Image 1 (cartoon, one colour):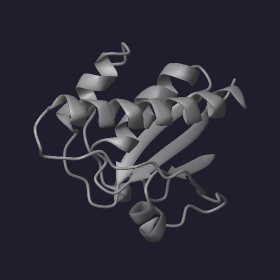
Image 2 (image 1 turned 90 degrees about the horizontal axis):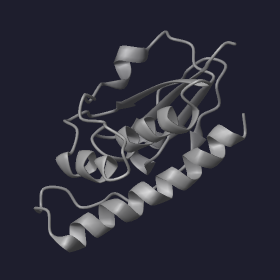
Image 3 (image 1 turned 180 degrees about the vertical axis):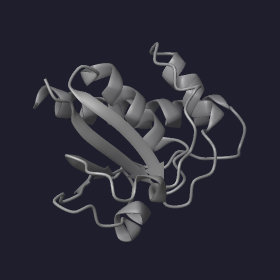
Length: 137
């Protein structure tokens, strides 16, 4: 069985795309080969790592990657998870990108309960969408 190759894009590849990568691997690991990247990569957000561990998905070994690392590769699906990535998404021949925007949780403001709640809310939104996506294949 050939795996579907999926690329998930965001601006910083620090939070939403990282969580989406971990979730899609979790929901459809046997069906998908999953990658994430950013148009302006930074580093994986420690709060994203923390809220993913809460649901037993470890993304601590992930690293932020630039979308250019994937130029010339073929993908079955390209999914943008923020508006900035949609606007600057490079063209991947034969693939029409899907755009599923999710809110950007606050960065660089500590780990208060309010911030953790916002990260969990975004994680759960991403989880629902990517669970449905995995089931559709």
